Length: 541
Ligand SMILES: Cc1cc2nc3c(=O)[nH]c(=O)nc-3n(C[C@H](O)[C@H](O)[C@H](O)COP(=O)(O)OP(=O)(O)OC[C@H]3O[C@@H](n4cnc5c(N)ncnc54)[C@H](O)[C@@H]3O)c2cc1C
Ligand SMILES: *[C@@H]1O[C@H](CO)[C@@H](O)[C@H](O)[C@H]1NC(C)=O
Ligand SMILES: *[C@@H]1O[C@H](CO)[C@@H](O)[C@H](O)[C@H]1NC(C)=O
Ligand SMILES: *[C@@H]1O[C@H](CO)[C@@H](O)[C@H](O)[C@H]1NC(C)=O
Ligand SMILES: *[C@@H]1O[C@H](CO)[C@@H](O)[C@H](O)[C@H]1NC(C)=O
Ligand SMILES: *[C@@H]1O[C@H](CO)[C@@H](O)[C@H](O)[C@H]1NC(C)=O
Ligand SMILES: *[C@@H]1O[C@H](CO)[C@@H](O)[C@H](O)[C@H]1NC(C)=O
Ligand SMILES: *[C@@H]1O[C@H](CO)[C@@H](O)[C@H](O)[C@H]1NC(C)=O
Ligand SMILES: *[C@@H]1O[C@H](CO)[C@@H](O)[C@H](O)[C@H]1NC(C)=O
Ligand SMILES: *[C@@H]1O[C@H](CO)[C@@H](O)[C@H](O)[C@H]1NC(C)=O
Image 1 (cartoon, protein in one colour):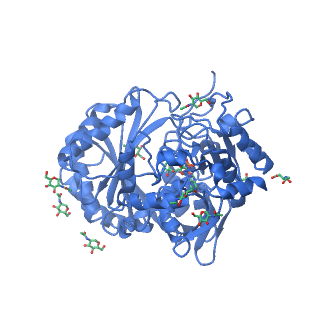
Image 2 (cartoon, helix red, strand yellow; image 1 turned 60 degrees about the vertical axis):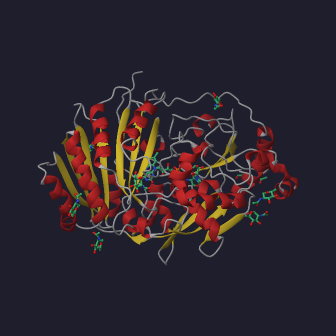
Image 3 (tube, helix red, strand yellow; image 1 turned 90 degrees about the horizontal axis):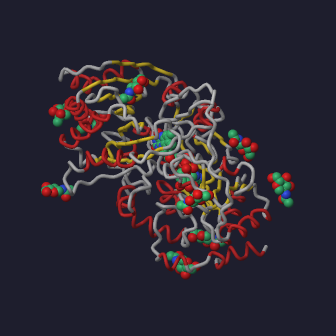
C-alpha cells in the first residue's frame, strides 16, 4: 500500500503506524426496542451515535479486535444526571446497558460482550481534583495516564494502578486494578474512599464505608454488575522521588528456568518487602528449547537499598551457576518512572500512539495462592512447554507473572471478605497472552488451544484438589460460569449474588460474566423493564 510501516511493540500498545484501521461493517442491525431507545435518547437530548450515524463504526471499536460487537447505540453523557437518563431510556426499551471507560476489557464487555446493548461511554466525564487533605476525585472518563499526571502535577501525589496509560480508570478500578506499587499501596480499588454511582433504577447515590456500605463493598471488585461509577474519591500518596527500575534477563534451559522460578517463588513468599514490585516475564526466543525470561520490576527507593533487598534472590540464583545475560538498573523520578514502565514514551492519552492502540488477542489468568504454591513438576512442565514454542509463526505471545502478595503486601493485608475482590491470598498471577502475529484480525484458530495448553501445562501437573484463582481484570471470556464465578469471586460470590438482586434486580447491566441474580432467568425475562414504576414515571414526563 506504499505506507511506511513501523512497529511499536509493548504490552501497552501494538500499533502498526500508518496502517489504515479496518472498520467492522456498518450494516444496520435492528435490535428489539432500539427504535424506542433512540427516540428516548433524542427526546432527552443526549449525544448519541447509532448504526448508520457517522463515527458509529469507529466508536464501536474495542481494544480487543478479536471480539467485535455492534451496540444498539452509544451515548456520551456529560453528567451523572445524563447517565441516569440514558439508563432509564434503556430500561424503558428493554435494552441492556454497559459502561465504557477505556474500552480495554479483554472480553469486550464494555460493548456488552454481545450485540445490541446501550454503551454508556464516559469520555466526556473527565474532571479531576486534588484536595487539600490529600484525597483526589476523578470522574471515570479519565484514563490511568490522565489520572497519574494530574495527581503528580497538583502536589506531587501518586496512587497504585496499572502501567498502561490508556487503560480506563472506570473499568480498571471495577475489577481491582493492579500495578507495581500495589504491594505498597494496595489495588487501585483499595485506595478508594467513596464513589458516586448511578444504579439500574436511575438513582444517583454515594457509596462509602458510611453510606450504602454494601454497595461500596460490591463495587470494590465487581462494579460492572452493580451500577455505573461516575466518580471516585481516593486516598493518594506522596510520590516517591527515587524509583529504581530493574531488569535481569536470563536465557536458560527449561530445567534452569524452573530453578530460577522456584527461587522467585520462595523469595516472593518470604523476603520481598512491600516497596518491591516484581514480575517474571517470558517471551519468545528464536532458538527452540531456550527460555527467554526477565526478572523485572520497581523498587520504590534508592539503588543501594534495592541491591540489599534483592541480594537474597540474586545470590540464590547465581549460586546455582546461573547469571543474567543482560541487566539494567536505573533510578527515575516518579513521572519518568511511569513513562519508562509504559514502554510507549508518554502518559499523554491524546497522543496517536495511545489513542489508536489495539490488539487482537486472547489471554488466561492463573492466580497462585500463598497456601497452595506450585510444585516443581508443574513449573518444569510450564517451562518445557514455553521453551519449545520459540518464535511461533501463527501466534505472538508473552507471559507475565506478577507478584501480588507476600510478606507485608498491602493487598494481602486486607481480609479476603473486606471487599468484593476475593484474590487476596494470591501470591502471584500468571497472565498468558496470545495475539495474532500482526495484532490485527483475524485471530488465528491456533490461538485458543495455544493458550489453553500453556495453562494446562501447569494445572494438569497439580493435585486435582489444588485450589487456584484468576484475576478478573484479565477477563477470560471462555470460562464456564462455575469456573469464572469461583476463580474471580471465590468465597465472596454468595454475598455478591444477594446484593446483585437488591441493586440490579432485573439484570439491566448484563454481560457474559455479570454476577448472577438470585432470581431465576425465566423470572427476569418475563419481567419487562417498562413495568418498573420509576421508569414509567420517567417516560411519562
Ligand atoms: C493493554 C492493557 C494493559 C493492562 N494492564 C493492566 C495492569 O497493569 N494491571 C491491571 O490490573 N489490569 C491491566 N489491564 C486490564 C484492565 O485493568 C482491564 O481490562 C480493565 O477492565 C480496563 O478498564 P477500561 O475502563 O479500559 O475498560 P472497559 O472495557 O471500558 O471496562 C471494563 C469493564 O468495566 C465496566 N465499566 C467501565 N467503566 C465503568 C464504570 N465507570 N462503572 C462501572 N463499570 C464500568 C465495563 O462495562 C466493562 O465490563 C490491562 C489491559 C490492557 C488491554
Ligand atoms: C441539547 O444539548 C445541546 C448541547 O449539549 C445544547 O446546546 C442544547 O441547548 C440542548 N437542547 C435542549 C432542548 O436541551
Ligand atoms: C453482531 O452483529 C454483526 C453485524 O452488525 C453480525 O455480523 C454478527 O454476526 C453479530 N454477532 C452475533 C453474535 O450475533
Ligand atoms: C473532556 O470532557 C469534555 C466535556 O465534558 C470534552 O469536551 C473533552 O473533549 C474531554 N476531553 C477528552 C480528552 O476526552
Ligand atoms: C527459601 O529461602 C530461604 C531463605 O532464603 C531458605 O532458607 C530456604 O531453604 C529456601 N527454600 C527453598 C525451598 O528453596
Ligand atoms: C516479614 O517482614 C517482617 C518485617 O519486614 C520481617 O520481620 C519478617 O521476618 C518477615 N517474615 C518472613 C517470613 O520473612
Ligand atoms: C527483557 O527486558 C528487555 C529490556 O527491557 C527487553 O528488551 C526484553 O524484551 C525483555 N524480555 C522479556 C522476556 O520480557
Ligand atoms: C488434597 O489431597 C491431598 C491428598 O490427596 C491431601 O493431602 C491434601 O490435604 C488435600 N488438599 C486440600 C486443599 O484439600
Ligand atoms: C425484584 O423485583 C421484583 C419486581 O419488581 C420484586 O417483586 C422483588 O421483591 C425484587 N426482589 C428483590 C430481591 O428486591
Ligand atoms: C433504587 O434502588 C435502590 C437500591 O435498590 C433503592 O434504595 C432506591 O430506593 C431505588 N430508587 C427508586 C427511585 O426506586
